[in-house]
Length: 464
Ligand SMILES: *Cc1c(COP(=O)(O)O)cnc(C)c1O
Image: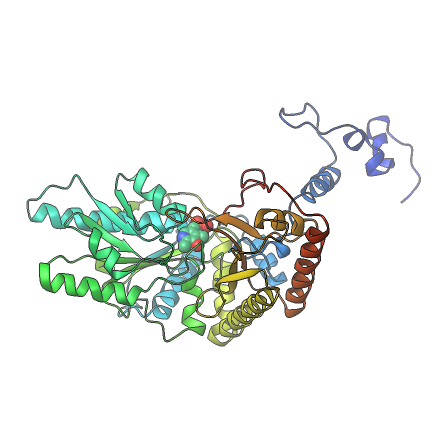
C-alpha cells in the first residue's frame, strides 16, 4: 500500500483491531449503539464471544446434525437470498422441495409415492403440528358426517417429545400420554387400547424415542387397531413421529415395518436436520396418499404470482436447507446413507460395551436395535462418589456434552445418561470419550462428591 496522509476520521484503521475502541471497550449489549464500527472487527468480536458456546462436534446430547461438508456451506451461501415460500420467484427451489417429498414418500413405501403430498417444514415440531392438524380435520369431517359432537378430540402418544404437548395445547386436543413404568418404557398395543375411543383423532408412536432412543412398535400398534376396527368399527389412523428413525431404519433396519407399508399409517414426520444430515432448519411431513391431507387445510395464494398451494405454519423461510437436503440425497444415495448410519450405530454399540465394562453402570439401551447411541444408569448398589449430573459436569471440562436427565412420568426416579452418535463421529473419538470417562471416574474416586447437583444446577440439558 502506498504511503498516504492519514485522514483523521479514518486514523483508527491503521491500528491493530484489538487496539481500536470497539475492542478496548465493552461492546454494547442491550441497547443499539450510536455509531458504526469496522465490519470485520465486529465479526471477529462476535466470533470470539461465540467461542464460549459448546463445541458442536463434542455435543453428544443433541440429535441434530453438526457436521456439514464444505459443499453444503457453498450451497447454503448461494441460497441465502432464496425464500422457499416464493414458489413463483424460485420455481426450482420449489421443484427441488417437491422432489425431496417424493424421495421420502418412496423411501417410506407410500403406495402413491409419485403423486402423494407432503412438504418441508422448519423441523419435526412444525411437521408434527401439520400432521396433527390433518388428523384433527379428518376426524372432525367424519364426526360431522355422522352428526356426532366434535368438541372433545384426543390424541394418544407414548412418552413424547415436547412438540406433541405443544400440538395438544395450541390446537385444543386432549393428550392421552401413556406414561412410562419401570418395566415398560414404551407405548404398547394394550396401553393404546385402554385409551382409544370415538374421539381419538389418531395414535402417534415415536420411532426413536427422545429419552431412550428406542423404537415404539408401530406394527404391533397398527395390528391392535386393525383388530379394534373389526370388533368395534373404530377406524383410528396412525401418524408416526419418525424425527430420527425415519432416516435410520430405511437404511440399516429395513426389516422393521413401521412406515406406509402399514395401511393405517397415514402420515410421517422426520427431521432433515437430524439424521437426514442437513443443516438446522429443515423437517418433513409426508402423507400416505393425497387424500389423507384434507383439502381445506391448504391455502392458495396468488399475490406472489401464480397459484401456489401452501400448508405451513410459517410463511417466509430460507430455501438453502431444502437444497442441502437434496444435495445429501444425491451425494450419498442409499448406499452412502447406509454406510454413514451403520458407522454411527457401530460406534454407539462400541461405547455401550465399553461403558458396561467400567462396572458402575447398567445399560438402558445397548445401541443395537434403534437409533445410534447408548444410554445407561448408575448401578443401584454402587456408591462411586458421584451422580450422573456430576459426571456430565466433569466431562464438560474436556468439552464433552453428555445429557443426564430424569425420565418422565412415571419414572422420574430414574436418572439416565445418554449419548447420541451422529455423522462426523469416529472410533477414535469414541476411544477418547471412554478415556475421559475413566479419567473423570478416577477423579471422583479421589475427590468424592458428597452432595450431588440437582438437575437445575447442572444446567438441565434439553433433549432436542
Ligand atoms: C427432535 C424431535 C422432535 C422435534 O423435532 P425438531 O426437528 O427439533 O423440531 C420431535 N419428535 C422427536 C421424536 C424428536 O426426536
